[in-house]
Length: 242
Ligand SMILES: CC(=O)[C@@H](O)[C@H](O)COP(=O)(O)O
Ligand SMILES: NCC(=O)COP(=O)(O)O
Figure: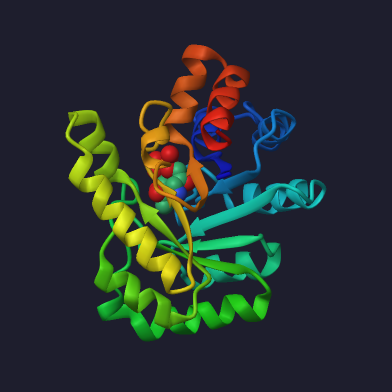
């Protein structure tokens, strides 16, 4: 089984486009929990254009009331972000190397450059009692380095798989992800995945064995407009628990 962690960024973005608390991010998270998701994710960016630091605090409280639901907080490890992680103690912190002005995540860590820093971050998260994960491209050299940093998991950045799936020629790209996942698992890392996964491409991606968690937000929100959130979560859970 792969855990489905729903990213609430786009619900927060909709809320932020008006002056009042609607849609209610925590209420939506609660609804998703009732629908059976195993996790909630936010990626609070430095400008708080969608999920805010307060959303992160509020969702931390919600998920602590539902001990079977994991809270995953993703983001760039600046001081403010690390303070938020220390304060909210999510189940998992996924480190993402995004620049502040980035539209969305578009690359994994370059550990050739940042190995020492990431090793220190992995130790800080361990001291906080928070599982660490690293957003990473399906690149065997980077995965070997990731295993040396002391992180618990990696999150494979799946945009290139999603693009090749949409273009109808994903076999070679999927094989690259399978090799990356297999290597990570052999080196003792847990493997998560995310970015641009959707109801069309997810089952094919999960032919890769042992993916522990997928975090999905953008497409899931759009699909919910078309089919309704209850139906969409039912479809995702069916794919994640075949
Ligand atoms: C790391 C990752 O792939 C997701 O967190 C994604 O970046 C969501 O962020 P946006 O909602 O800002 O696109
Ligand atoms: N880590 C990926 C994530 O949380 C959601 O990415 P997307 O589905 O919004 O592309």
